[in-house]
Amino acid sequence: MRTTSTSWRQSVEWTVHELAERAGISGRTLRHYHQIGLLEPDRVGSNGYRYYGPDAVSRLQRILLLRETGMPLADIADVLDVPTTPEVEVQALTGHLEHLARCDVQAGCFGFC
Image (cartoon, rainbow, N blue to C red; front, side):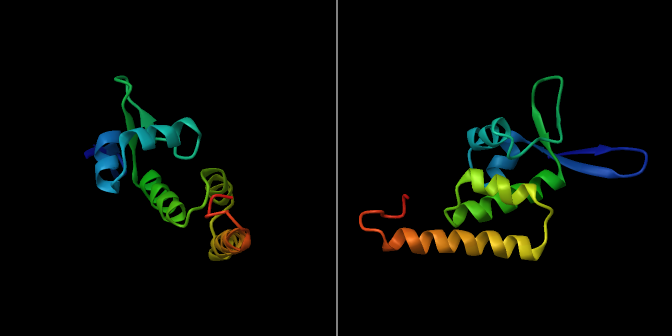
């Protein structure tokens, strides 16, 4: 974790390794999220390191929570691209639950439909 200061505030940022370790995921997962446009770092240093600030950490939290529901990454991207409101979150999760319920009814689906 690094603290950078500007004339009007201090900001905390984490490298891929630091953030992945704290989030309990691999650095490869973070790099994949960046590659597909799901999670952008706040900046990329001259050394090529990606640095993530508080907003990116908050977005990663939402990604991981939605991923735990089994929601596909493409659907997570759609949810995160809409301005955040509780109604949007509820609608996305309700839609995902309905999809899972339909899937469960289908023979041989095993949750992978």
